[in-house]
Structures are given as C-alpha cells and as structure tokens.
Amino acid sequence: MIETSSIPQKIKQLMIILIPILVTQLAMFSMNFFDTIMSGKYSPADLAGVAIGSSLWVPISTGLTGILLAVTPIVAQLIGAKEKRDVPSTVLQGGYAAIFLSILVFIIGALVIRPILNGMNLESDVREVAYAYLVAISIGILPLFIYTVFRSFIDALGMTRVTMVITLMSLPINVILNYLFIFGKWGFPELGGAGAGYATAITYWLIALIAFWVIHTKQPFNEYRIFKVIPLPDWSKLKELLTMGIPIGLSIFFEVSIFSAVTLLMSNYSTMVIAAHQAAINFASFLYMIPLSISMALTIVVGFETGAKRVKDAKVYSWIGVTFALLLALIYGALLLAFKSDVAFLYTDDLHVRELIGHFLLYAVFFQLSDAVQAPVQGALRGYKDVNITFVMALISYWVIGLPLGYVLANYTSWGPYGYWLGLTSGLTAGAITLSIRLIAIQRRSMKTARPVQ
Image 1 (cartoon, rainbow, N blue to C red):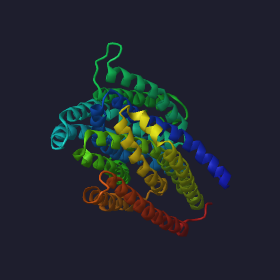
Image 2 (image 1 turned 90 degrees about the vertical axis):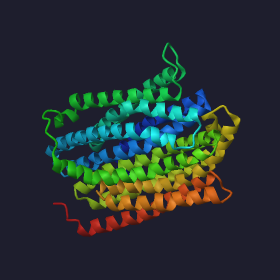
Image 3 (image 1 turned 90 degrees about the horizontal axis):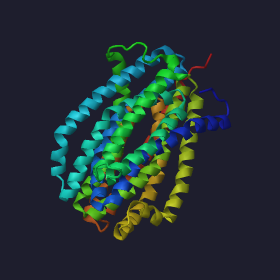
Image 4 (image 1 turned 135 degrees about the vertical axis):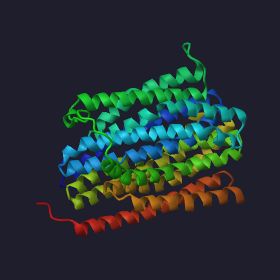
C-alpha cells in the first residue's frame, strides 16, 4: 500500500484492495451457496437438513474465524508504523490460536451436536442429514482456521489479489466434489446433503496448503520469513490478539447467529417453509458479501493510515467505503425486486417452495440497506482497533432488539414466519445507526489527539 493525497487516489487504492477481497468472499461463500443449491436439487429434505446444519456451523465458524481476523488490523498498523520485525510473531501466534480454537470446537461439537438436534422439532430424515453434514464438515475446521490467519496476513499487506487467486482455484474443485459426493457420480458414494460437507472440508484443506506454500516461497511474503523461526506460544502476543479478536469474533457471531437462530426457530414450521427460508437467507447472505468485503478493505486501509498517524486520510477512507456500499445496495436491491422469481428457480424445482422463496426475498431487500451501512462502519472501527463498544452495540441491536421483536411478530401477529425477517431488519437498522454514531465519535477523538507527522 502507498500513501494517497486525493480522493481519486484513495478510491483507486480502495478498489485495488476491495475487488480481490470481493471476488474472494464471493468464491468462499459460493462453497456454501453451491452446497445449498445442489442439496436442494437432490431433495427438499436434504436442503432443509443442510439448512439446519449450516445454521449451527456458520455462526460458530464465522465467530471463531472472526477472532483470528484480528491479525489483519494488527499487521496493517505494524506495517503503517514501519515495525515489520514484529509481523512474523503476530502471524505465528495467530496460528497457535487457530489450532487451539479448532480443537475446542471439535471437542465441544462432538459432545453437543446430537443432543441439540434431538431437542429440535425436526422430521427424522432432516435431522439425520443435518447431523451427517456437520460431521463431514468438521474435518475442515483446522485448515479453515489456519487459512484465516494466512489470509489475514496476506490481506494486511494489501496483496488481496493473492487470496482471490487461491480461492478461485479451489472453487471449481469444490463444485466438482459436491457433484461427486451428493449425487454419487463416477463411482463415488451417493451421500446427499452430507456429501456437500465432505466436499467443503476437502476444499478447506486445499486452500490452507496453497496459502502456506505462497507465504513460504513467494515475494513479498517470504521476505518476512514467517516460518524461519517457530517460537513457543507467547502469552503477551496471544493476549493482544485475543483482546482485539474476541470482541470482533463475538460481534460477528451475534450478527450471524441471529440468522441461524431464526432458522432454528423456524423448525416449528413445515419442511417446505424451512427450505424456502434457508434459500432466501442463502441468497441474501450472498449479496452481503459486498458490504462485508468493503468492511474488510476498510479495516486494511484505515488500519494502515491510523498506524501512520494520518487520521484525516483514515476518516476519508471510512466514508468513501460506506457511501459506495450504500449505492451498491440500492442497485442490487432493485435488481432483486425485479428478478426474485428467477432467483427462486436457482434453488428448487418445487413450485410451492419457489413461491415461498419469492415472498421471503421481498423482505431481504430492506435489510440489505442496513447491512450496507453497518458492515463497512464495523470494518472502519476495526481499523481504528475500536472493538469493545462495537461488540456491545451488536449484542443489543441483534439480540435485544432484532430477535425478540421478530419472535413477537412471528408468533403473535398474522406475519407468521415473515415476522422474523421484519425483526432482522429492525435489528440491523439499529446496529447501523448506533455503530455510525460510534464511528463519528472515534474519528473526532482521533482528530483531537493526532500529532503532526514529522
């Protein structure tokens, strides 16, 4: 990354960092996207089972990988402050954290998955698909977490195109493996929805190994000699990582888990409603990759400028990102309204399920606008290393406002399952407002305390 002096230069640098991140996020999400679509083509029960399994897996995996994303702002600020010698230890301590978290998740999952599924009001075939999917995808926990650390280091250097290439290389393999394992082609076992879990787990191993090879052998990453000396776990470094990472992870967990909680609450409805809801959430989440990518790009550029004490530049980057995200949300929201029937056709051939998907997508348009504000604002705040208040705001917005309101609307009004989506929109809107206020406050404080660059 380089220092910029004008808004056009900032837009250009932001785009250079953002576009590869967006492609990477879309490709990473496409693994789950194709899991859902291809399972739906196998049967509605497999679509519903993968939906339930994903609802348990996604918030845990994204929340814990969110802890490891703290590597990005830490490394970005170190580079901005020209303290490159501390980068290798930060990355390796992130690796230790990844190993510990993966072991923890594997052990806890083995103990609680079956009781949780048994406690849900699910049809037996849906329950078995969900369990088999979770067992299969658990094989990929360790490489997913390790890859997150490697990717955070690569992205913090502004080399986001590298992770884009890695992910694009692996996506076709994931789709082919889905085809083989779900439908039992070319002599492979026919596993249905569970096959999607095995395909994704294998793909996680692939991208982790490729990222390791790139960091170890290719410039400019090998100049940092990340693996030259492998230190023992360093509590001071781990403490810095976890102090930042845990609030980031919890913020992400509270946002993602509210969608999963809604899916789990919908287990009281029919398999058709569960399948339609999950398909609509899946596509809405696909669109969410746009503001999420802008958020990740802002963490990098704001962290870089803050580390270099260029607080005015950090502020300008923040609002360029938010504005761009909001404009894009207006565009793809209009497109979603126009083509909701075509989107529903992607997920299933069942006419009733397609009709339900179309209804759910109408509500998705509204919370896309709130996502377009709150996600980039969170990314900017992470660049400032402001994470604790953000976590509290996320908790209140999603779980104190959004989910309870959705439950009331779904169970005590005529909105039915659509009431949950109105609650989601309310929670995301509250988050967008409160987080924006926090960002303005942080920017004002940083401007007052900034020292002139010598």
